[in-house]
Image 1 (tube, rainbow, N blue to C red):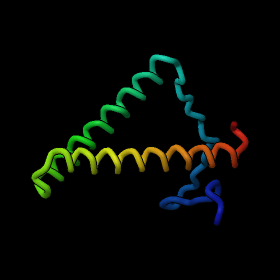
Image 2: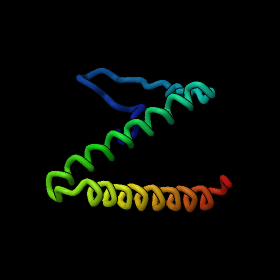
Image 3: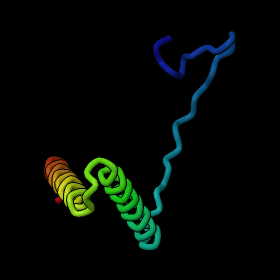
Length: 92
């Protein structure tokens, strides 16, 4: 009864076939659109943070500077983390 193949639903036995694999299109055009969408989202979040910080600081220079430091730090840490994962799995 623990196996998925042996599951009984409402008195009937349910047979499960093997899952079909999903192929991900890694073509160049799709990759570029993915990167463009990611960067656009990143920029929109940065603009929203600047607008929020402008409400608190009333200084555009300080708000932009804080966002640049925060986003730069997050990007750097994310990059280092991805490199560590890639090296751990032997992809580099």
